[in-house]
Image 1 (cartoon, one colour):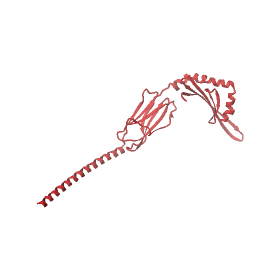
Image 2 (tube, one colour):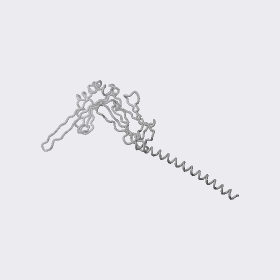
Image 3 (cartoon, one colour):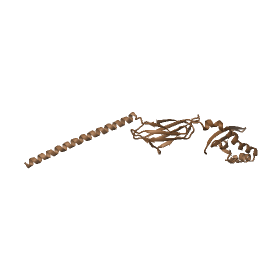
Image 4 (cartoon, one colour):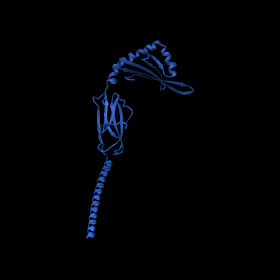
Length: 262
């Protein structure tokens, strides 16, 4: 459902029934009211849900104007009776105005107009190892509202298949957090960018990250370079020795031929 949802009522009722022959049992009934604002207050939907022992049994929908049962208990004990009571239906139908539209201006600054810009940070979650799979994470937190787009770029090119994301996390202060991971091989000179798009930003925020090669990786790289250089030297020396020896053998062969001819 599109629009902004605001829960305006939450009532928790616990009933305890004590029987002389058995321990007391707890029965929990919850009533939750929700307002869905579509295009401000021009189009508002009001829902009031009734939950019995963690199972929703009946709800009122202002778009329908009636109570709708979801379980047999909700139909027999609630929906059929409430829908037959004119006064109850009139009260519930009026609550789209008395509760939702009446409270819109109260909730609008904090639930609709509120904007909080995201904080963006890149971390490497394990020791960097060149030429092998690495996992780098873009941590984005402190943003509101919850809609956000996070993109990974490697050397300026958007990554897709190797990107995974955590669920959207609620921080408890009306802000959200998300972790977007990129699993990739890293070569010397690679650059990575985490780009974040959010309604609180006038333009996307990009955070760049260049691998900080660890001592072990740097040692491996230096060892490889030294090995390559030494190998090249040995090849060149061997080639020079081979060419000289071949040239010497050619001269010796020519001298022998001249002696035989004389």
